[in-house]
Length: 164
Image 1 (cartoon, rainbow, N blue to C red):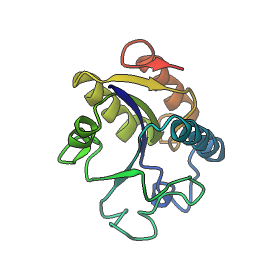
Image 2: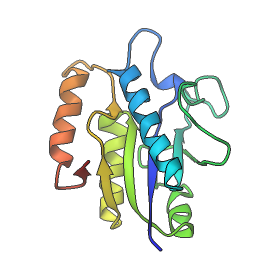
Image 3: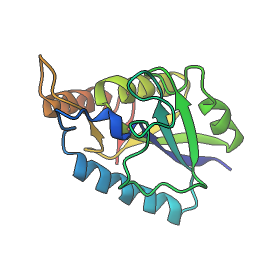
């Protein structure tokens, strides 16, 4: 029987620099926890993806998930070193193991790891879903975070995923 999993990407303490705030983070964390609750009620898998690099050293305080997240030991955890959550990770093997062909995606950063993972998952044939407003990012020198998120949601809509 096919299943849907919730894929939570890089909602880690160190993704938010000390001198800048991730856009709408409190609401994103609240919304992600609501999705986690729903997935738990339906006995669907929850997968946390955590980035590991020089600024997010494995098992460091910065690498940890935001403490507000309702993460449990029984959830699945994938460690990655690239924006693509599938690149040199166990993600696809875990999805096959649990017969998952549908993914609901949320997390950080919208234009990097979330976008890259969405495009890769789509290319691999997964059916993708998202609840609007459950990704976050930072302002950059060219665009504000809100514009970045709106732009990507517009690109993804009915091309790469379906909004719930």
